[in-house]
Image (cartoon, rainbow over all chains, first blue to last red; front, side):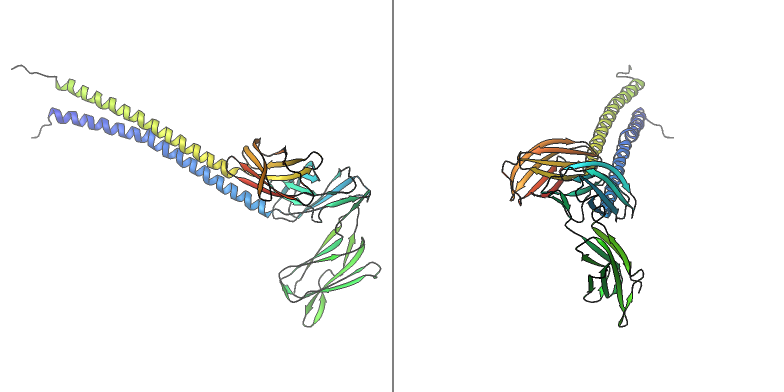
Length: 250
Length: 144
């Protein structure tokens, strides 16, 4: 028969107490510390994902901004904004020169809005850069460049028609004529284009134009669906550039 | 024969008390160290989170030839307030700076700075906005 000595009993009590202390340290200090650190790591990962998403959305924003006066000698400018990006976009401010106007306007994908008119009080000989600033931190300048105010009149640097052909592969011919058919122009792409095609037609005067886009099919030219397209170029009180979109289904 | 020393009960109590006192000390130290380590780690992580969430841009710049002052608008479009310093460069050389500007989140901040040289039409200047969290925004401005 074995007996436990007094010294062994004391050791046993100390061992139990030591174990209890170790377990209490584990549960009250070490585990909470690791849980807190783990929570902080989760927060960091969430912040990284949120920041990445914000940057992707920022890169996906695209606005086409065009400014025009209601009359050639108007003191006010109207801003036309097209959301051509992949995300709904909120415009916080419109800059005209070194003055800004709070707008807080939201545009869904593909939406077009007219903002203003904004009173500019223009000075002769002064050029005005127009900017739209979004809440995601993008700044979109006017796609036609700065507007110039000279001798009491607004001057646009561009007057033209932008032909956008949604294309997979093809060779194109673009014909355009004015309303009286006195000004006729033809343009043919150099070779077979792969991907979308953009062609800019600069015109001298505002008015009505007819644009026909043809695609070459088996040695002959076929009109693309929608051609001829009637384009009304109105300046002032309208955008000095007009975008035309046609699709090549062949 | 008379027994000398302390009884086994007293000895157990004394030994247990010593273990308890030392154990409590170790526990208090460990808990303090763990809390301190966790706080340091969380604070550092939050600081990194703020670095990640900080966003700034130079929204617009205007040079007034009459006053000779350069006006700069900075937009804080991030989720945290920031403090930044602004530097102006001409031909690659720093010509002016202004420090310690606090900008609240989602707000536009404007400042004016004397570029110390007379700028003329056709000049290009570079502007660097450097935040205290080591993020930068650059802007190239054409004097028109």
